[in-house]
Length: 182
Image (tube, rainbow, N blue to C red; front, side):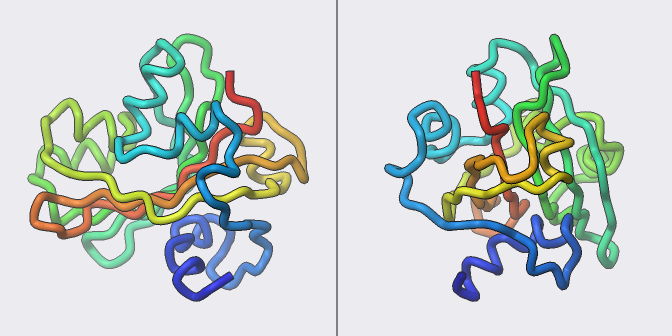
């Protein structure tokens, strides 16, 4: 794995521990991703509305770990779930630049009740999505427990950066889908 690839996995490394070498990630071309996962990952849109449309239900947020770094950077590990039956539809490791938001949205982000993509959509925050890599990951027991899978199962994901119109970062995100999307 190159240094650039390791850098775009930084939010996931936070979840595993900064010195962790345990990530079993292989970067792949989008064409190597199975069709259903490819349709959910290979686009320049936010994942929250993409998942809501795919699953036909609103998406709920479940925060598993969080830390504020300095005064303006929130790192968290989350599960996005279907609101109707609470089935996990994504694991996300995300670093959010809080200084790019007004106080009301910043407070909602810190509360951790609504996915960032949902807040951006709800408050009509202009932004763009910039996927920077797609990968296959052999999940360990931690991700397996969160995604309803098993240790060693292969899942797919992407690294993405959300940006304000001026190009300044909103968030760096690593998104992992459960191994069997339906």
